[in-house]
Length: 131
Image 1 (cartoon, one colour):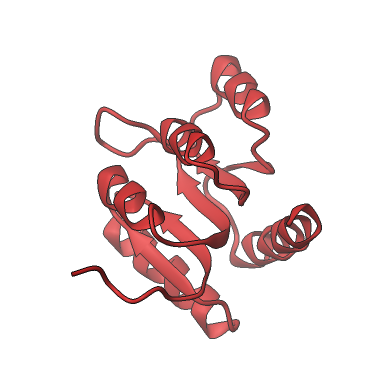
Image 2 (cartoon, one colour):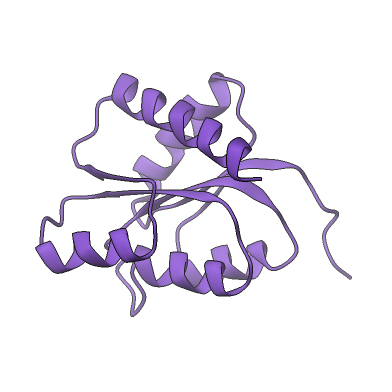
């Protein structure tokens, strides 16, 4: 038995549960419909039957997969969402891979709440235009 399909605006992926919760609450308080996951496997499993406009992913996930691996997997599955990567990782190779995957924005931690909200707004507008 599969779960009922729900309209989700933003899929959040971060292995830091406290940060995941605070970001989800911030976005929900702003009127977005959000679904958060702390591990990449659950996020990908959820995305199989769901659509969402934007993915907000941490790069380092404490697992074999990183946030860009998840973006790549979801794009292969047909996702047209806009993706924002949030990370403390500043390696050039990571930034280049993000560019190759057409990640909408690559934000460095720590991210201020207003900066995050502004980026989410721009990414959602981009996702609407791409749809």
